[in-house]
Length: 224
Length: 240
Image 1 (tube, rainbow over the protein chains, first blue to last red):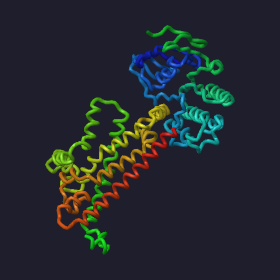
Image 2: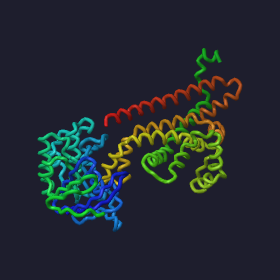
Image 3: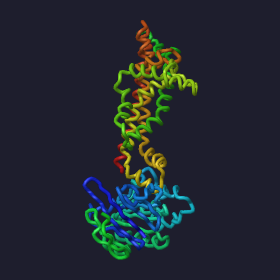
Image 4: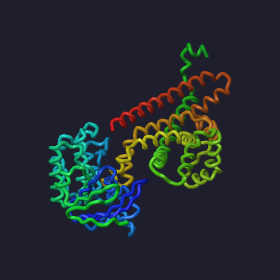
């Protein structure tokens, strides 16, 4: 269960959305400027809304009415950003393991070797990010987020820089991850094919407002 | 003097000159190294945080750059002299005495070099992509870990450049030093204050020339190293 209810103002842009997804995978669609990335940043705790609530599987990340606001590092979220954001001074292996050292070993559900072989990263481990192609960088970023063993995986257009073959591979792996470790996923995408294959719920945003909610969830009136 | 040049004795440094060179290196090394943690912290604060009074703090940090050095030296004397508030407290608690000691020369050098150091480090921290810090935070790193594993390694060439600038400034420091700790051979007489002393002394021109050359070599070397590091920073920034 993914519950999001936020109101946020950034300059002239206002985001107001109330989404309740009962399924494991929530897709957020919409034209650019609709507020998709803003919404992900609110879920991750990188942006603080003026009012709202974010909860995943009974864990409350944010509840302004109750004064709850977990720091991003305490939310245990794996965030695959739109751009890879790899650490340029670290090798691929060091990038992949970055989040692991902050996760207690009891919580490490995701195996390093399984991730590297499924994402085809074995040959890249000693390389530096500057020497990788766009698709390779994105695969490392996905692996890095998975290796946090997250409570929730956020993906912002995660497959946009990949070729079709890799896209299918990684889609399959994301599905396996979701099923094997029951990690709920929120992802942003323009691609209908990605959305239909992966998502159990689809939320459509337009200019900061929820205009449509499909499948497992139900459209709720905006919280204003 | 010309006779000295021809005979080669020109290059013979007197014991007092050696002492001044050694003391200068010691004062500049300790002054810049001791102020580095404060410089890094201040640079990070100015680069990454918004807080009330930031403009005032920024102004205070840069003040030694624009004040007459003699004013900075006099303020140090008031504050850190034996009867000064800080000087008295530090002597009482930890036995640290600044006035008319080499430690005072190191303090004066550190204060005078601080603006240059903070400026270089601040620029390099500002050049670190804040989105990388966000990514580290989202991966579970606490703020200090984000700083030490992402911000500092990426800003490191700038930090080293700041350290070297602080060092070079410390080597050249004169006004605040002579006001605060005077010009005592063997204790507070650095290259700069020694040169000043020799210029007041008839027949000491060769000493002046020798020490001047040493000062040029040290300052120039430091600036070249700092430039090389700055070039490395911009190359790395271009790779991202």
